[in-house]
Length: 191
Image 1 (cartoon, one colour):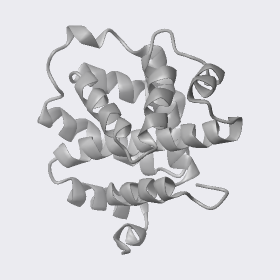
Image 2: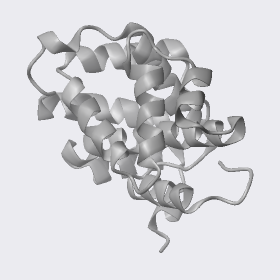
Image 3: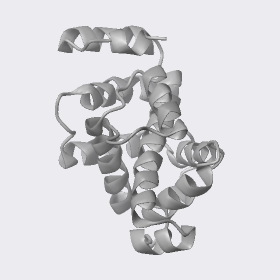
Image 4: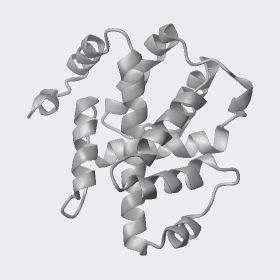
């Protein structure tokens, strides 16, 4: 996923991805970016919904989301929209998003950059521009876009892992999906 030598934070993010059974790849990054992009343009007023997504609903949507995430191609935007709409229809995702953002805010020393990037681009109304956030954070253009990529990837990993951990029999079901699609799981279990 990284074209230059990865930083300590990037190495840790990729280890977290492996633990969550997802690839640290450009395709996975693009999927996460598309999910955030579609979410930010289609979000509803989440303050009216006060219940979390029930576990049985997670058990229904997680396999579909996982299968889409591990496909050979980037998830098409219309499919991303359908997945997000399905997730919204099953309960409140705002608590899970807030928890994910809080974990990002506290992520090593990089959280102080990742959090405002994500918050400004995807969770404020109206969203802020890359240039505005870059200036606020006093980062060069190249550093800003590297941190933006890391922030998006980290958001996806933490958000997915929160779903995976509540999904009953997730490892067995994911293994069945992997076997059915011919996905090599050996890289997830390296030390």
